Length: 293
Image (cartoon, rainbow, N blue to C red; front, top):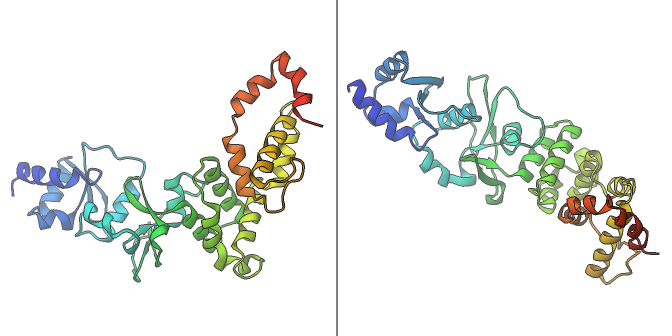
């Protein structure tokens, strides 16, 4: 095949794969390894990894190495066909998933993939884990099948990542409203005893991570109370709304009030408006009465 024809064929393949193509995909469409080598030498292609090339005119992108690794894990299949595999296919996981979700500071020197069958590789920049996921454990992020934030955080704990690092990832996920704490507790349940809690008590492990992250109820309450002129107003707002939800008195926080509920209400509160109000002369006169008796 002439170089011009090879480039045209490759352009069709790379268009839906972030500008990338595997040598196996190219061969299935009549483009030989020799043609790939020549196109690389001429500057039309860039070799990303063993058997994976990128169109030199396509942007590399932040996650190019992850995408290349994922494509290489099943080099004969097109990305569009593989995405339908969902949780039954090869999934980006662990620290690599955390990096894609942009939670925590966990960028490693290798791409971590999970597969439902045992796989091995000689590549130092790629690591496989043998895993079977539930359908709810996998999502699509940056065009790749990736473990959900909840599953990712649980996997970090399972991998014995320092809990302070995990807590930082959890904090960032909560601040972006991307975390289902109930689902996280389910995922952490098998790891509870290993981390010093009662068997299957995933909620207790979530509480520990929240405390390390400074998102436990006591820490949040202390931080709010320390805000000059704002603490009383926010506290009253929270207690009154909690009372309405539980039909309790506004000054008795029910025992069943959960940290997720507190975090959700604090996220929903209009902090910018409150900050503007609290800095006006009128606000300084009204804040004491707003706080209630």
